[in-house]
Amino acid sequence: TRRVTVRDLAVAKERGEKWPMLTAYDAMTASVFDESGIPVLLVGDSMGNCHLGYETTVPVTLDEIAMLSAAVVRGTQRALVIGDLPFGSYQEGPVQALRSATRLVKEAGVGAVKLEGGERSLAQTELLVSAGIPVMSHLGLTPQSVNTMGYRVQGRGDEDAHRLLRDAKAAQDAGAFGVVLELVPEELAAEVTRSLHIPTIGIGAGAGCDAQVLVWTDMMGLTSGKVPRFVKQYAALRSVMGDAAKTFADEVRGGAFPAPEHAFH
Ligand code: KIV
Ligand code: NA
Image (cartoon, rainbow, N blue to C red; front, side, top):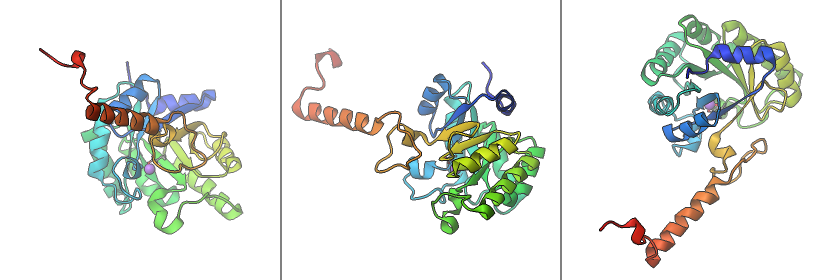
């Protein structure tokens, strides 16, 4: 087996084949998705909210991304593993971005990195690509900018729509191999998808994108409380796991576990 490459994703766009992407933050979960045929896994800085107990993605460090990316790479054989560059690891400029991305490639073994921003991250994208590191761009709602943009649909209105199109073209021209579109109106995401030769990966961006990504804890129903409307829940892991934990607790307290077959003599 060989790993999926960014070249495979370019071919999929040429052929009009859609593909799925999920986040993963540990080796075991990643191995399940790899065995299930998910071709691309993102070690997203969404780990801040979903895995590490932070309120936002902003506090996530490069050390955390590197450690969990290494775990996801170890847990997989086939998937392209993308490491998210966290807030503060590339905003200083291209050299900082290259240093951070190089760590993820060398220490963790990721096949690509992702960063937020089109025009504002153009120099970073160009340097990484010229150094041989594939870059995925992330536009629309960019959670690392929550303190200035909040969490709302992006690209509404002509000016914002034009800016998104410009950013997407800038990312493509800088050499990005794909563009995540987060919380963007469906019509605009479809227009961006048509105007790029690289794939768009939508999250809350409708059916017109080339690929779809979801945060795994959201789509598996493990996240507590409300999840955004664009998330389809494919399982109810929180109640499955909660019920199992309660049954275990009851059986220990009541003496039903361990039974004779669980003991050694
Ligand atoms: O961190 C993340 O999970 C992401 C995806 C939502 C694209 O950036
Ligand atoms: Na992210």
